Length: 144
Image (cartoon, rainbow, N blue to C red; front, side):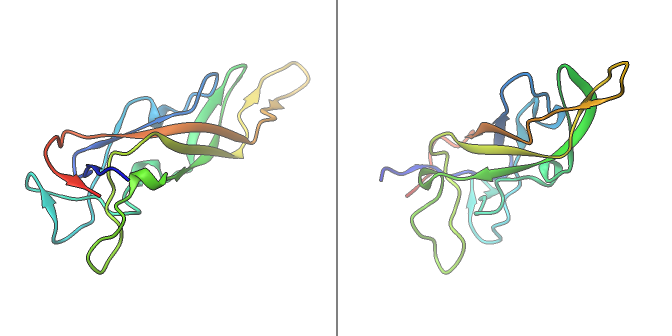
């Protein structure tokens, strides 16, 4: 497996849940914070497995999915691909690397609703699949 650029504090994750779903928290890339305490790239701590979902995205997150315009809530889960992790690390968790696009899933907890004269109609789609990818400014240090 080819190596790829190591993900570090300050790099970003971009999550895409296709329209009509709108999750305000993921409209722009979100910065990552590396939890490594001893490995740095460009004076920033590297991101380890588990750092891919920043605290701000841990939910529950509000969403709408027109015509369901009254916000509901849901949680985001990310499923890393093998290409997003180093094969091994020294005595600890694997290090995140840029790799390929991977799976994001938004699972509805409280459905958004569509206002109607007969009362609110809930969004019937409980699981909304999407994708996620890392965006890095590291162009020199590889992990493999």
